[in-house]
Length: 194
Image (cartoon, rainbow, N blue to C red):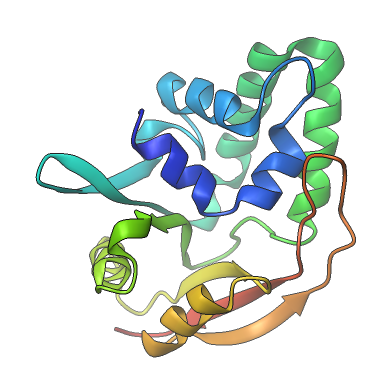
């Protein structure tokens, strides 16, 4: 958890901070630690895969399908209310639903890749591509498209995904912003077979 949670946060710091940082309660990583340790849902350890090098976690990612939407929604609500309480938790839930307008959860037949992050010391060395290949191999049906969302403010990640055969299929603008973070526009990317 100590190594995985900072990487998960690194995969989308502005969006995580916008939703989960609550002054006087804690930052986004405090919530992510709570949810990761609890285990269930989108943010739990059961949904994540990690790669290690010399005994330390250097890459993390998640892969799931459209069938997880409602179970993950219920798990997130339980985790948010358990961590923030009812009063502050309601605001977190509202912000989370707003972000879903920019970064929509998976739907239909796809394998959705999320929370992809490589330790900064190993970026640009093929580790991210290896993780995506590993996650792609989890598909029971190789005809299912691989789908992910990338921040328009992260051209380096988009370039990696394009080298791996992903193409932009849609861009969603964003005006979401608060004192904790500003959510950039996001691009939905898809890779068919491979």
